[in-house]
Image 1 (cartoon, rainbow, N blue to C red):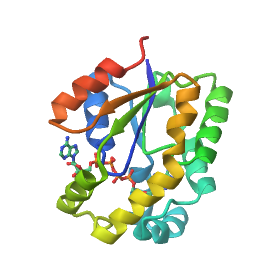
Image 2 (cartoon, protein in one colour):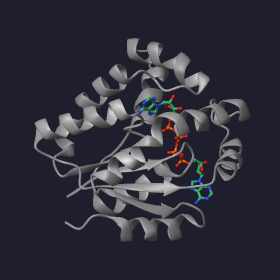
Image 3 (cartoon, helix red, strand yellow):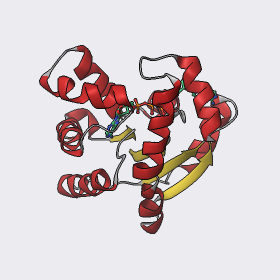
Image 4 (cartoon, protein in one colour):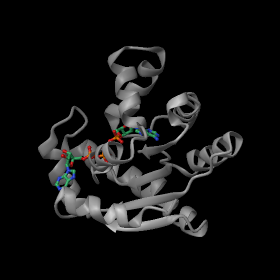
Length: 185
Ligand code: B4P
């Protein structure tokens, strides 16, 4: 059983580290970024609504993302837990997640905050080269992170759920730090 959120700026390595957690703990990774990109690629109604915000480095609206997560978190494969990657990204999303997990009787065990300096992130994402990885959009995403997502650090700290790990160094080194930060049980 592992029910956690990986919190961190875009490009902090949430996706990279989630893959390793999935392989070791056998619970699904739920990435709102991946779900949204797949909706865009399949040209669904939701994808068409999300595309402009994603291209501009803005957050997709809370109601779209929360609706998508409600659907995903009620699927059977989450019975033994989940790794939330890139969700929540705003206080409204965090509060909606609390309500949803309360309803499901599966409260969050912990939040791991992966901390990486923003200049390092710009370098990493420019090297990755996804369609939203040009310098202007990356800087926009970092500003959005600062304004809308950073407040979640205090939100989860107040709940006693947050542990911070340094997200610089080798992928395995960071993974070991994350494992040490995982909640017991
Ligand atoms: P995401 O898909 O969440 O994209 P990300 O933040 O860029 O990815 P991540 O942090 O997982 O970084 P990764 O491991 O890939 O979001 C994309 C967009 O979707 C958002 O801008 C927004 O528009 C929308 N969206 C998503 N969720 C939303 C929500 N909840 N609400 C509203 N809108 C939402 O690593 C990045 C790079 O670094 C990779 O190239 C990787 O190889 C490299 N890397 C990883 N670890 C490294 C290390 N230790 N050293 C060096 N490089 C490393």
